[in-house]
Image (cartoon, rainbow, N blue to C red; front, side, top):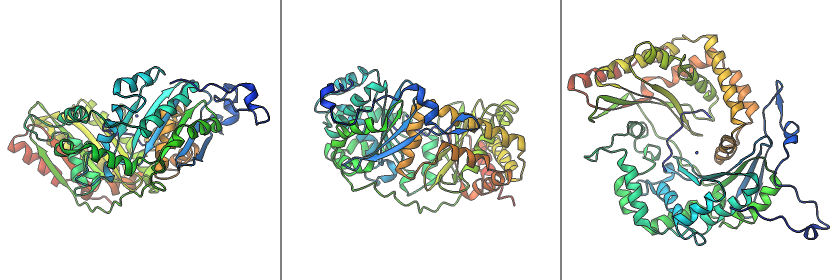
Length: 483
């Protein structure tokens, strides 16, 4: 499936133990699961609260990095295999191929010759094989009981080591149906989010749709699939993260005997395409579509994850949209009735970020909603931020960070997916950095991000000529930077 950003700043059988005599005169075998009583001994404490889980990484002989996040208080484990490939790595001709390859991998392997056999094997473990393709990564994951991790790794080894890439026409038909969700009956694209991203990164791979254009999907061949797979799916361009009540040494041993057999491929992680795209806004695009509401996607070029001001931007996000008392919902929905729901979020990348505000409103309210959004953002730029709002943002960020320690999938994502691009900071370091954000930091980043030259807006809906004129005027009147 094509991954839609989750607006956040943060988707067999157990191997038998050898007989006792087989391990004589060797170091005792480390049990696969971590006993629960070691929880507090393994975790760092901050203010009396368990914070940092132990994280270990080993390099297999084939170049695959294996990371474990020890969470002995949990009862299930997430196995996540990250591949450094997505739409930002694709040429215009290949756009959509990463997503198509992900789909084709579900069509079976040598041991599981079709999709039914593959999914049955996974589900007999109590798991579901999840996959998603993003702009800068592809992910395959399963959550299982800890003792079934070795069998899950065998599934990964089969999936990526011996794919059949069969039934291409059937999979093509399915992907084309997925594409249909974003187009009207005349073949016009009506996904406001993708339209706005295409404007924000016009001519750059980051502006391409993850799923690709229809004409590419109709043209892809099995040779294209095999070429793309051979280029990007080597062990050297991937990272396996296992999070849950597991021991690192045991995971590495089982990984070496399973995914350790995958071809090396590139000698290391492939270089990330440079983001040297220049954007000058404000830009507006209206796409006519029938219906009583118009969908809006209001995008800004934001600060990348590695920028020192990124956490100030993440704090600003929470002041705008993190609960029903925050500004977007309370002022625009609760008090003015301009939209049933309106949300903000960040799609963070290592070298660039997108700050998005998305919502839908009646066709006769579109210009008013855009004007009111601009006023809310201008309030931040003008310094209208309170210590109480900042304190609430910190508390909610801390709560979600602590809650993520109870979610193996979240831990695998942070310590696995992030590591494709840079070493992930510890949770305690992240909390300390958030605690250090000041009101001046929030105001400064608001003035930088919410400038009109960083703005792209897509509106999809039925607007008369007069209403479209009002919308254009609202965009052209977007406030300049406050100083």
